[in-house]
Image 1 (cartoon, rainbow, N blue to C red):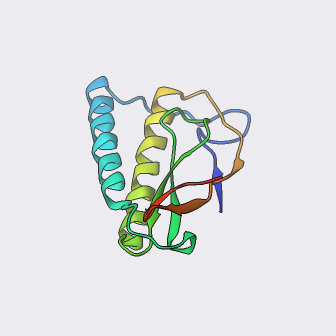
Image 2: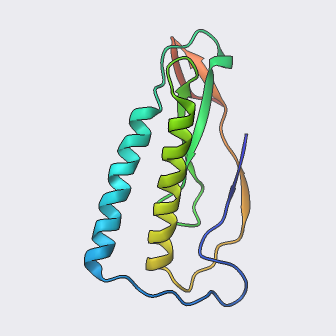
Length: 128
């Protein structure tokens, strides 16, 4: 599995964005923490009997241009649609915060391979 990741706009001069007041940035950070808890709760990593029952969901990094993190989950016990929507919402929130905190930073679009998910002792984990 692969993940296309980019942040901070594009081109040589990023479009100016209105800087949010500190209180709104704090509210955004709180939303991010709550959304990440929801994603982690939805990414149920057990049970599994084989590697084919395990997948990974990408979570955009807090630090913009870094490699995304990924969580393993079990196809047998995870609502994939709910998890995908929650992870997408989390990515949007984190990107919004990144742009607000780093308005003049442009990251290149990079395609990252996600680690494989494997089943170990009835639990999905990141594999080799």
